[in-house]
Amino acid sequence: MSRILIVEDEADIASVLQDYLRHAGHETEHVADGHSALARMLEAPPDLSLLDIMLPGLDGLSVLRQARVHTRHPIIMLTARIEEVDRLLGLELGADDYVCKPFSPREVVARVKAVLRRVQTEEAADKATASLQLDDVHWRASLNGTALNLTRREFRLLQAMSRHPGRIFSRARLLELAYEDDADVSERAVDSHVKNLRRKLSSAAPSHDWIRSVYGVGFAFEAPLE
Image 1 (spheres, rainbow, N blue to C red):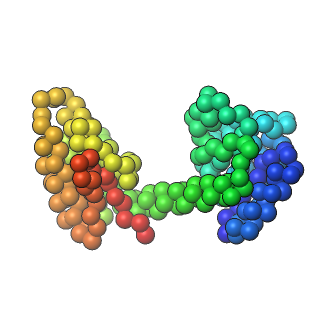
Image 2: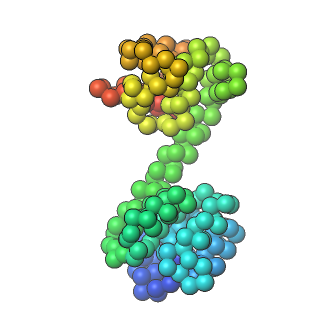
Image 3: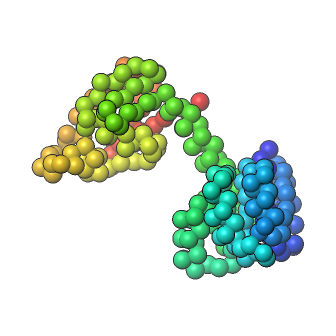
């Protein structure tokens, strides 16, 4: 069961959201103004907040801006302001998603589920990659306490990919990362580096394939989820 904070000054909308979220198995709390919302987020951060932009006292974007100084819990913005600049501003301030009014309560529940699932996946990935240690000052890497003995170019590739588990990097982009000082290198060099990385990672942790090949596109770092 996840604890959802609903920040909405329209009582009818808040009531409908509470009903649907409770039916989906969540615990809910409702506040109707920005100052109360910020206080609740800082005192006891919920598992997720649904935050309206147009609020009395302190608007939603101001709540988001101040909350992000202290908490990283996921926040989905609710808004009737559909201009792109508003959406982009909210995302730049740290919003995890946007739902524009009028919306379907089922859509909101689906967005809540998707964001919570994404956060849980990211947390699991962070935990799983904790055993991978990268020292970018001395260009050293270790996995499960075993030194990987990487070349500088291999280190650059592993560093870039491991920072974004699951993200697919094209061969061209990996080539730029590995050979930033030399443009006259074939993309085949990336395949060679990835092959060496796989071998070295497998030597330290043979039970998992750390780098996934995406046919015709490139490669992605895959952390094992525990």
